[in-house]
Image (tube, rainbow, N blue to C red; front, side):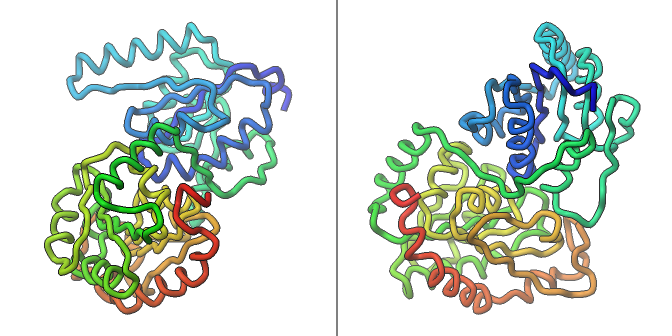
Length: 355
């Protein structure tokens, strides 16, 4: 297309969710591949910054620190728009599907504005792309580029971590008594979306105990501050020792800790996508959501899901006693863990040292 020639400055609006940010990474790579000379800036919310700040395709991070107070939020919005106008971007690629993302790009006088036709924002986009249902979110983000004639080839997210986050993670685990040659299993029992994505806490506790008694592994429990209750519940239910780091590390350090793990057992969550993108063996348990849309992508993962009539329902809470999750037993998960261990233990080793 003629109007995309001579692109020198590109603004990417990152999504606000950790998992979606990771699923957008192949589209970021394709942007750089097709515009190798362009300067790429990423506009993002503070909590997803570690996903992009070390990526080789990113030249600049711009933090959009939206406030809860409406008057302060308007001031921040005005600041961002004024700054973007001064930068004179040639193109905006909106991975964030909200109306506001398109409005910011429009008011910032960015000539080419690419994004999915969602949230009533079609008139704000120069190149709106119809969102196709029943496909993976990675493909949705790539479709934005395909809408201007770009042929894409990258489909697996790859995550990069700052050295200081690796060092901090190593120090924390050392303080917790975890040696570099000990097998380490991570449990991620939370899911910000809601209870309908969370495998029962007692089931997580069971496989945590088995990892200790059967493999001689150390177990860490991970999650955000909003997931502290569920993580504390898993720890309380465990009979064996485990280290609960939920809410005690920021995202960058959590990424470093996950990279050290031999395996992560997780619900459909941001931490699941982090593990898969880092090449860590990942056991992903699905309930109300659809792995065909949000499943992990990478070299080493297993998806566990029971195909019952009402799943996927995409509800945050379940009116039917969470049969899609309760029917997934610890024995079934353990079997997949053993299979994954046998497949990957000689390949992956211990995190930092063999990746």
